[in-house]
Length: 324
Image (cartoon, rainbow, N blue to C red; front, side):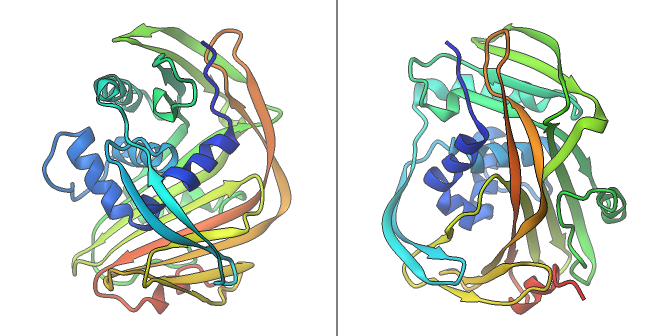
């Protein structure tokens, strides 16, 4: 078996299988708490491992639930493009334990390592049979995150953060290898019915391609902010359920922005995009057998999403990135 997950497949699976979770990250957070950690309620504070698990759930659609709904695809101008039936794929029960062991192994690895873990379930189209762990760097202090991001040219950091007393601040930045860089194999092997390979790369070759920020306020307000680089512009900005609307807004520094009014009146999100001034070359391990295959490509666009929940003015969300 030579299982491959290309960068395009990684992102396209998000569009196909996780639109409901993408629109409601608190649902994904609850799934992590109950399915991955064996807990009955949502954890108050995310660790780096949990945020990485969220990345995998959002990007691979690997939740143990089957959800089908009718939703409308919306352009970056807020216009409805099409109406489609959306389904989140259910992971077969026989694979859940193996996947959880694989996830736990990945989560316990050092942040500065890159790793692949996979098992053969007889179907190479099953995204849940493989996990990719990118190089990561986590922060529990806003000042430390902003200091790090001041040296990052690939992603846009918030221009400001919500005012008020914070209960917690957690952020994680994910990195891939630049196209001129090199992956170094540390170890390959088999463990608990799955295969794995671990790599490292020179920090000078690291290209930050995505970050998550998770903020809980003392007043109960919470925010999740995600920025990610894409290889191509997308006509579809997001999906809407019945009764939800998209409002085109202006955010300085961004080419397009939408304020989304969700069914849950306590939840709003803003989605934005900007074309990168220059394409950014990247390299990714895609094969799972030695010699390992590599895919290269160009990032051309940045997408930013802000989710906000409880006790806030939705117009304030866009101001977090409004460059003066």
